[in-house]
Image 1 (tube, rainbow, N blue to C red):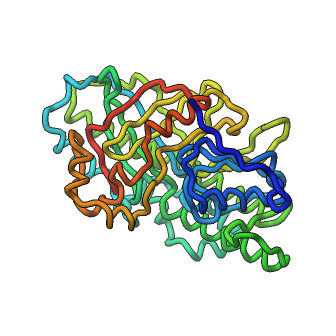
Image 2 (spheres, rainbow, N blue to C red):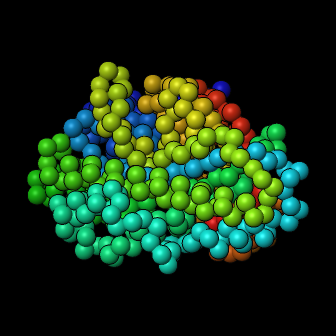
Length: 398
């Protein structure tokens, strides 16, 4: 059964909070309530079943606003999301040893923070490049934060943290290719720049907030329109980044697998982004921070972590969640806590059957650092239907 925890509105918190789990710590609950206290919040704040503490806004939160936007609610990994395709191959057609495939993909997709290609993957005359120049023209301070053209060299790269590339099998042993990444260094710079600008706006207008990271732009201000332009550009860049990596990976797989076709049209969904949407009869800016869109019929991806299950889902269009669902399991332990609590031996035990790194460099990403993905799925049966359950056979971390 779905689990819904509600925090009713109060004098200090004029908008209610609805959370699809009862496993929520007080710090996270308080962070959601602080967001709900802002005057431009619309209707309520929703928390997904993978909800956990974030910077400013809660990871796993869905926030509807009217005539205002909170840059930190999107964060600095703007447009982060998942790209997944199903191939016309099954487990019986795969080689017994997948290590060579893993290394070959690692050779063509730069991995880790700061990494880039030696040749630019996006042309300087492309619409994306011209769009960025317009953003720089209006926001010269942003241009000073970015190494010239680095974004063009980072297109098609994975990054670090919880970003990953995977080969998975579904319940019928069909092969899936999945990857998780965002807008890389350029998205990070855009996020940091506008978060700083929002804080300065609050100081200029002598606006006091329950958390300085909830600084916002009001509709009509220069920074409001500048942020919208910047965040939409970064979201498009993130989508293209994932498409470039998927293309590169499929070109590698051609050399190691029997001839194949793509049998499931690519699912490419953001889970850190803003979008204009209609909810409860009102046009709002909807911010999904660690949540995917789950309008009725929408296909989405909810990944586990390394050895945990992942899911292809179809949205049920629940208006109470603002047509949203979780983006994963959500962290149970911080990265520091995970490294203190677990060892490489634990990592090896939790990733049996998965061709992946099994060293201390990815210890903070082992499955037990995350919430129980099966429980997360149980809590949102009123938000999505499960179409496929996937298990990883290859995992690549940055």
